Image (cartoon, rainbow, N blue to C red; front, side, top):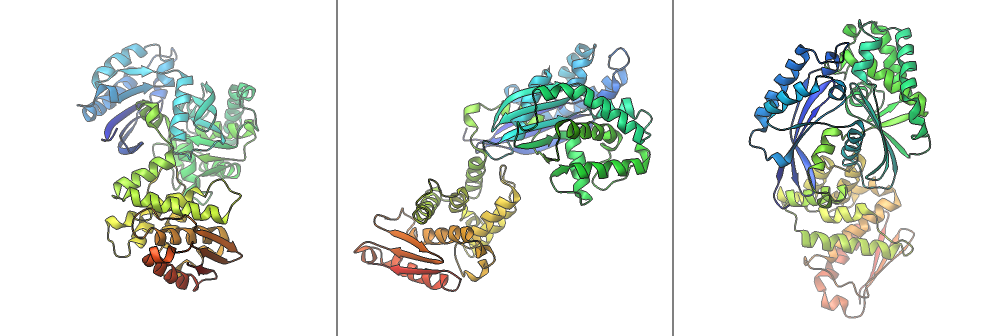
Length: 490
């Protein structure tokens, strides 16, 4: 797919209905638009498990608005899925028939297991491609999904009828918040989830991730109050529970970072999350960025067209900023070859070195003058799926220091591995000065402590006089740091 394709996912959750519109290009899906309405259908089930007329009207009105936005979309590029509330509702067919008509696209009621698999797909689409064993837990309004997988493959999935809307309605029905209510809610949640231990045993994952509504609400609240950024800890959950107990009623809960639409169901969601921590012996969970609707979007794209997320992000940035891909690859490959000469026992150079080589000229689209500074700014402030902020900062520092005075990189070069990556990148850009693949036959780079020695074969300097001159200038620049470059240009 060389041209961008518009995709849309509609998620009919128990608490909110969501519409996500994305553009598929450069092997990635980029958000174009996101609409969310708090419908709370999960509260609209009566004692006979029928949706009340009022709750159906709220849902239909929302779907009509979503339908207007989706007019003209290719039916093959839109998928609408409904989850636990409509799985339970006895009169679901009535709601689905009219809802599909208003939306303009068929609405599917998916199983809890399919929901879990789609959640996992959405979560891992925003994570680096690694072989880590991942536990993903999604606490929704009326169901909670558990997924155990490795890399991008979901291996075990399960869905339980428990969630923030259901538990708030059942154990905090009047909005009153007490220690006794929390204790009862957590005990009940552990009873429902107890069977999860048969499959999701502690020690069967490397990293635990929490996704979607409850996780985002808790994570954002903790972060806004100095209780951790992007991570939910046991201590953070204890702190949040104390804040709710101090408020005594859901109507009086006022916390920085807690959105108004989440306040009415936060107690039930917190009780379930605390039960998960206790049951699985967790000390922390990473807040995941992906969710069900992103998994639905990626499901609309052929699997063979979805590549490694790091590669996709790098290629996307290169195309967006008009990078000369041939020259960029020459620089990346040369930098890697130089690194491997300095580390003969290693099979691969650091991926960050290749990425920096591919992206070192992204700033040229802004200006050729001081383009390395523009490149650094772009990388450090880009939304690049798969990359952590620390990785983007590292790439930004590498491209910032690949040319110009080296004094500005003093702090970065304090670590030898950082210094060697930067020096390999600087030498690669020098050797690729003609914007052609350099002749490295017989060129050897060696290291002893903080001294590099570059040796070329006989006649090399005569064949490449400009490269030889630039190498001498580079040696002079490097001498201003704690490192040295000694040249033997024959």
